[in-house]
Each structure stands twice: as structure tokens, then as C-alpha cells.
Length: 122
Image (cartoon, rainbow, N blue to C red; front, top):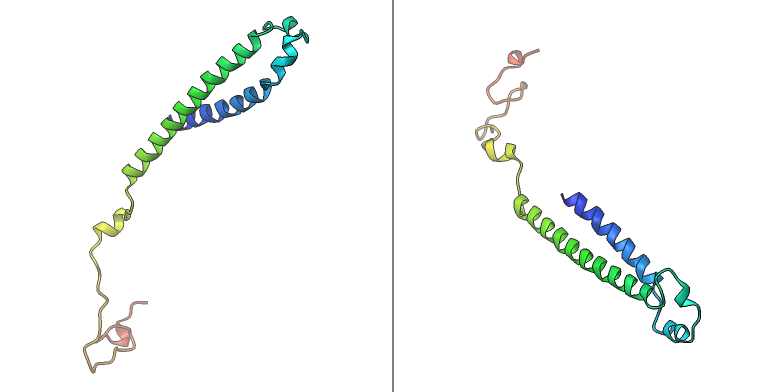
């Protein structure tokens, strides 16, 4: 669901940028007022501005809704994972204390205190 929302968000953003670039600025209205050929367009003299403005507004609403949705999913993911987690193995295993030799006694050549050299498995 999060991936689908992300794809819709990116496509909406790209389409929104394209529509904003297609729109005329406020200075273009002066030229259209003197009949510069805008009335012969597909949308009519004022139809393209209304169509592009409405489509831009709808895409802006979709963009904000998908932004809120992605924010919701990202906060839910961090709550379920927790801030600091330990792997399950570390929690279930008891702490092991390494064997130490008593004071004054040196470990035998086998490695552990009190073991003989012949006790080492081959």
C-alpha cells in the first residue's frame, strides 16, 4: 500500500509541475484581450485557463493527501519497530561467564585450569 501511494505521489508531482509550466502568466491575458488568436484554441478563449486551473487544483489536493498518507505510514512503521531493539537471540541466551583460574594456579597446557595435556580431544 505504501509503495502504491508513493508511485501516485511521484506521478502527481511530475504532472503538477508540467501543468504549472503549461499555464500562462498574468501578463498573457493582455495579449488575449486584443484577439491574439486564443479564441480559436481547443478550449476556447478562457476555457484553457479554467481547465488547467481546475486540473492543477485537483492535482494539488491529491499531492497533499498522498503526502499526509506517506507521513502516516512512516510514523506507524517507526512505532511498530521501536527505537532500540535487540535481536531475539540476545534476549533468550543467558550471560556466560568465562572460566577463570583460581589465584596462584596457572592453567595447564590444555587450556583450562586443572586439565592435562592428554585430555585434549583430537
